[in-house]
Image 1 (cartoon, helix red, strand yellow):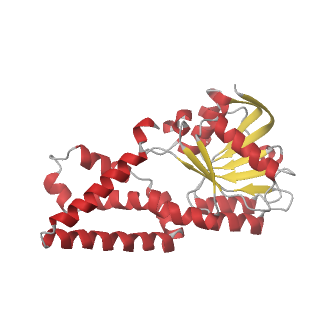
Image 2 (tube, one colour):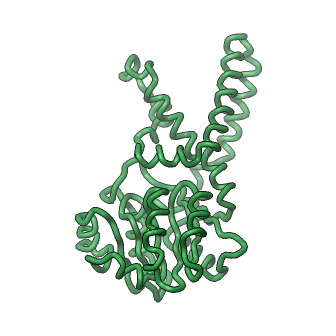
Image 3 (cartoon, helix red, strand yellow):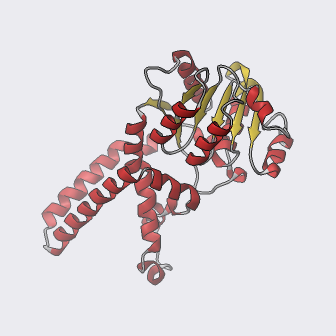
Length: 288
């Protein structure tokens, strides 16, 4: 145990991210209690029997009224609905945060529905797996990865520091602060666009004609096509302005490269490939 925290934590939504959060907190923090809420009682029972969470409750308001920190690990619109439904059930002074892949709508929604004595700080772990559900949760998936938080000038600085300390302790390498709007613009390119491109590759008519001839590059580029359909449809819908802009930019890039190939412009192709190769090497993932 790296740090001792004299408080109770409730995790709402014990799926891949919520389950991984619970396991990593259990492994790395000493807290009074780790509790969880989930529609699947079987998942809660499994987590309790394995010692990941401390108690089971028939009344979901009990852990909320006694939790110093609440981590919402559900789909974006479910996050908003939960905060609205439980507005009067959160403990006085509670820190409430989330892990969803859009931030502007969530942060604004929290401002609209939460009591003034509760603090909301939006969050988004830049880590995960292709598979979904508690059975695939793993506390180690956060090791060495990045976490985005979206506090503003009104945020309680002590609670921001506390959240950062917790995140560093459970394995995140960098905690990046940015505005909700900036977050949504950036993840449209860094996260949502790659998932769309992977799905395009898998849905291509060429897939059936070549499915016995796929190499490593095809496996790499389509890895994230094993997708949570409900979640990603919601994420793209809620961030549609940013993702449409990124798709239009990619379409322009593809058209430009198509023209280079069609016009036998080998020199321009070499410039594109040399630049992409150089930039990829600078990312230096292997040493991270």
